[in-house]
Length: 73
Image (cartoon, rainbow, N blue to C red; front, side):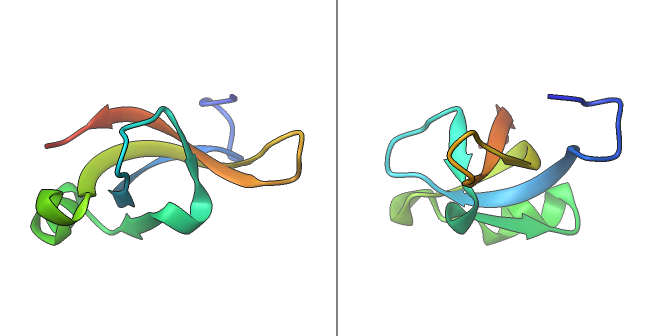
């Protein structure tokens, strides 16, 4: 990943993750405007967790992915 470049950016998000993984499919990631917005929208009982993610990035299989930087809750 090129964190210094303009391609992949760190973003706050709510991630649907029944199992907490480090590679996240783009269809499970909802990007939020701020950390507080991500925390407010999280619902751990429904497997929706606030996180800081990097992406999107295209995998070798042409899938759009985000990578976990850290969980916020």
